[in-house]
Length: 456
Image (cartoon, rainbow, N blue to C red; front, top):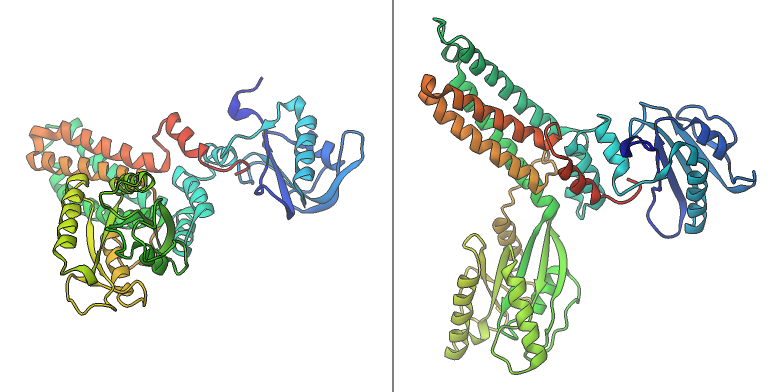
């Protein structure tokens, strides 16, 4: 049996369910015999041909378009056959089964999730950042995220990384030359302005990191939990932000007993907003469960909207309970998680309190809250060049930053620390190469591609 990456693979490449058109995709080193068996004849390269797809006995399973992409000019870099049939699930399963039957002699098997894209990566058709951008483009929840993923897929992010890497390699070359010829009269590093090169490298890295953080925000969004006492208007606020009646709103305290969530977008940034049960002491068993779940959601939040009721702001008991909740939030949440105080029911009270004052009922003040949410998310007015990025890319760039900071310290010490300087530059280059997959582990590849859909 052939090694896994050498085995031809096949899968249904369109989403499950019924549709006008469905695609079965096959990729392998040589598919000439399979093409002949399914299509009854050879196909012209990259030319759509309308014909019957043949069963083993020569009868037609269906009729549709067949396209043969000979290697290396294909998505995977291997021979690829795409069969475009009618989009009924039974038809596509019959067609896939026929491909597996006809390809038994060449070890054809069903593809694993993401395996077509993995082949494209392994055959140098795309790098790892571009491969991830394919999945991000498919999963994009906002227009801004889709456009940013498209830029990454086109190679913009990879080009930035490669430019950083090339500058880093040049600096490494100078340092290695100095190490190889320590007795030369010419100071390689000083003459080549190594200090200035490293400074410019760090400045470029800072710009790439800023864009990558924005891209990661477009992809991931942030989790925003609305918390507060019963009847503060949490469910009304969720409905107002979502623009739909998602949560039940009544005057009865404790109406919300479970988590209600909705993803909204503000300037293209996805925000996963979660409404929770009102926080109070309760003897009701079901409500207590809801309150426990509320605290669980708060503990994993990226930001918390602490909702206060302006109509009860002068009530000493209410204020005391708010103070207890505020103290508990401070104890339970990491310092990096912002808690935004929001004062609701401005339409019913003239009491002035807090930076964010609004009416979830009338919509007054919602724009100020949206701006505040973007601020706490770390979003900046998106330049047109933002590319999609993942948290692992941001972490890799942070490691590059750390190594270059250490390198700058060693460069200042010059001859006493040149070996350490060379090592920090090498580690910085390895961290950069992790982004594009030029230096990575098989375990990481397995995690990345397993998150893809089958057939992609």
